Amino acid sequence: MRAIGSKASPARLSALWFGIQLVWGAILGIALQARCAELAGAASIGAYGAISFGGALAAAVVQLVVGPWSDRARRRGGTRAPFYAVGSACGALAVVAFFLVANIVWLAAAFVALQIALNIAIGPYQAILPDAVEDERLGVASGAMAAMQSGGNACGAILASVLGGPLLGATLAVFLLGGAGLTLAHLRGIALRPVPPREPFAFSRTLVDLFLSRALLFLGFYTLLGYLYFYVRELEPFGTQVPPTTASGICILLFTLAGALGAFLAARPADRFDERVVVTLGGLVVALSVAALALLHVSLALPPVILVAGIGWGVFVCADWAYACRLLPRATLATTMALWNLAIVLPQMLAPLLTTLALARVHALASPSAPSIAFALSALEILIGTAWIWRLPGRVVGK
Image (cartoon, rainbow, N blue to C red):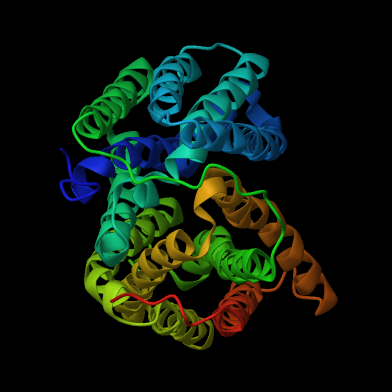
């Protein structure tokens, strides 16, 4: 008989995650903005905002639907594999269509279709680690997931910067299907862990605190990401010959690659120590790094500080996933993790709104110091999220 989880390979389980994050790294980082500029012209900023919001809303709704659906399938003895297969196949078609459509309305439809398709897979996929990996290896497996996320985002951004049009769409589709194929083939050879037959879903204090802590940390992350371009433009860190778009892209690449390193470093500690300690160390590193950027205006300091911040972020993402896998109820994993994932979706919408309100409050919207103020706000949000994690129980720790 196959031993439950004993042969599960974190690398092969996370192959699909690499493919999904490759698509998002290309689409959300570069391609969506570029296609809006191509098809909407002077109205591209407004079109980008509307399309982004519609896609994020579709993602949230789909995850809340497919999460409980996949939980029911697991409780009845089935698997979540059909969700991975259908979502990946439809996502491959949608990403190809994204680069073929010829007007802004069809672009919006293709982007929403891509969000729906990939989130059919993403919702159930967030429960793959507790489904297939024993508790004492969740930290290592979460480290693989976090590394694949950072690596996929970085590779997607690189592909989008050197390829374009249908060739980029086809390349992304091939990587997505390849990652899905590796994960699905691996799942056929391992036994999944059993789940309780019935366990009613309920909003618990643990779920609420886990959500709020993650939401605050990601609020800080998206504030940092959203105002990085403007910070770089004011600083001109790579000299006047390099456009701010390129310079900020280099910073994002450094951050994501360093994030993969941070996830690798945090993998074993997340299994051996209280995850709250590991999350706190990662959060503090990011917060202090962003605060340093808010205070310093030295171009030579930007690359090393970005690298340190990326390492801290990778540590947080690794420990955060492992902690959620151990804390959330096994019979409703995909349902609760879909709600948990809204702590990423909602900050995407709220970060620019809250930062704009804060800058307007201090009359700094048009000031050269606006990016530094935004970074200070980012550091504060990350610190509060890091402190909030200590409202969660420390009894669930690695062995």
